[in-house]
Length: 359
Image 1 (cartoon, helix red, strand yellow):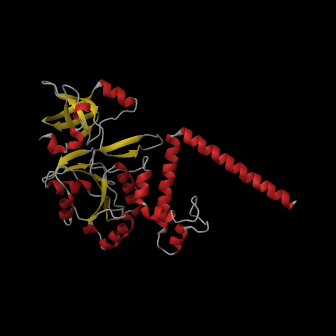
Image 2 (cartoon, one colour):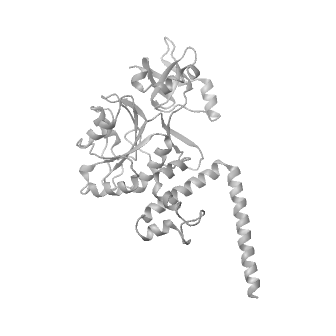
Image 3 (cartoon, helix red, strand yellow):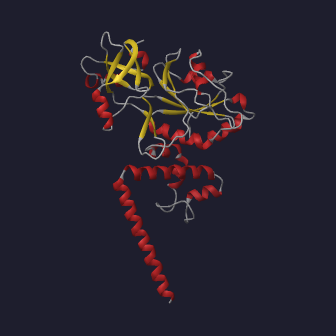
């Protein structure tokens, strides 16, 4: 296999001189396992470990290799492992906030062209979860698409497709059954040679079964979901890149138990263009879309043009982004806190003056 088969193109070729050091070669990270990375390129595929310099830079906030990354690798004859000297600038990346209270990002995959958001048409189906994945996918720099899997297990799949069409905002939707193979031709027809596609979604939505179908061989282990709630177990334990028979590159990922957005203001706006367009029509620029006069959002709710659950989903993601911004930028948080204190002082003063007038 050669780098051109792994997605190397003119974008990365332009980085070769500046980013691939002397004595090194470009390589792509195709999997990651406990501190070691599997790399491939114009050499025999092998394991790689980070250089001391890369370790030091990563502690200071530098890029740590992720599956899909292109790296500058030193391949030494007679050595079992390569050494990763540098991560090349990324064209795109899908990230999330790390789980828990820590305020930091986690890069899931890098240099992807298409993000396939996979959802299952079973008991764990959630429109709101799909909106969340779409927001981070738009933010990643990749083009999102939605795959509605397990059509064979749903009595009325078209009803659920219609629900997704109302929130997709033009994003392609594929109705498939990875189990039977129905609908996969449309997905395969959308792939291009050298293109990198990542499958994203919760455990149990059928990503690994879908990968096996697209690869036309059993490469990924699969398990049945729980019958009680249609939740799946983590059958895929690591991220891994595969080459499809047509030459497209596909990355399978473990199911995400939670997806907390990371710095995805533009992605949220792209996902909720309908809400943003309505908000722009409100009489007041600082409208909170509650009970203000001339609120176009409230009018759309009353006329059933906008769904209340979708508006609440938009509010929730907006709140998350606001909270994250305050945590990421202490100066901005302090300014907002000061502004709140001033506003509350003015409110108290207003009520004191009103009460004086009554006496």
